[in-house]
Image (cartoon, rainbow, N blue to C red):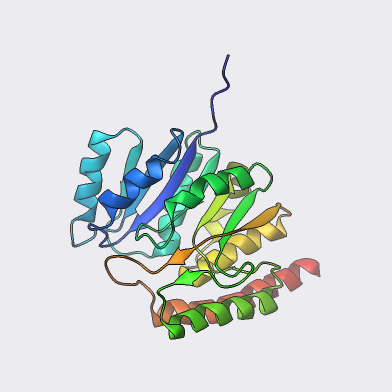
Length: 242
């Protein structure tokens, strides 16, 4: 009897991604028949949520969560992770819906996840693998990673990336209810909590390409939160040692 493969859920937060969604989701699903997609839409004004419902009605591997308004990336992922943990998914991904994350990398993540509890997609492993970003954005990301690594002690090349694969047990143990971060700091905090719990974390080199359609969700608020949040994580580490 053939063993049933572990199910995989790709969590994709959306806000005004109507142009990208019908293109990216079929590519994600084509990577493996065990893959499902969960779209977490924050009441997009462009009708992304309604389009997601139509797609879900046509394919049982597509699921949708609707939220009443724009509540941020971090809380969208928390909602998606909680949904996944209520069901029998073994591998749970974070992934953007704007083609900045290439679906072709998904099988590589799943292969690495046989060895690691958390796999981080890295833009800075063995060089810089970022396409079409302006130099200002690239420098901001590069030095934000340096800053986060120095302050928190995280030994990884890309702590702010949003293409990640968790084994179920990681999300069950890192206490999702205590995570309040958004943007850069959400990615740092989730990795930090998994690292401090002693989970085995690996990095996978990915090609990151700037979005095809729509506009970036980056804001000054997200940057400011990341600046102080890493100090909070450092303090947390010190207190726990004491």
